[in-house]
Every structure is written in structure tokens, then in C-alpha cells.
Image 1 (cartoon, rainbow, N blue to C red):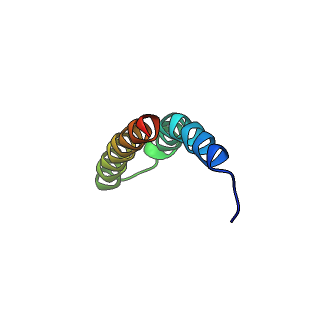
Image 2: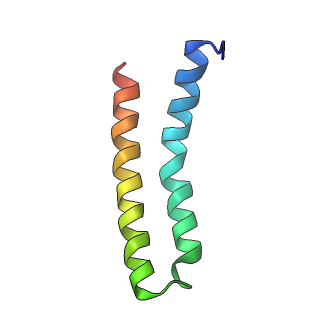
Length: 63
């Protein structure tokens, strides 16, 4: 794609910083309308996305 590596890294860091808050907001918007089972799934997914994003952010920072 011929994108400069420093641009990729900066974009990845920016996304890693924004994803948790944006995802939390999205879950909060739909949570009240979900069935109990769907709420459980949404909350588990929220936790997974947060953990994965934090792990990825740590890897990006150390590289």
C-alpha cells in the first residue's frame, strides 16, 4: 500500500486509544434494548475488546 511505517504506527496507536471508549459508548447505547442473554454476550464482548485493545496497544508501544 506504500504507507509510511511511522504513519501506520501512529494510526494504530490512535485507534488503540480510542477503541475502548467508543466501544463502551456503543454498548451503553444498545444495552437497554437487549434481551438478558444478549446483554450477557454484549458485556463479555465488551470485556474481550477492551482486553485485546489494551494488549495490542502495549505491543505497539514496545515496538
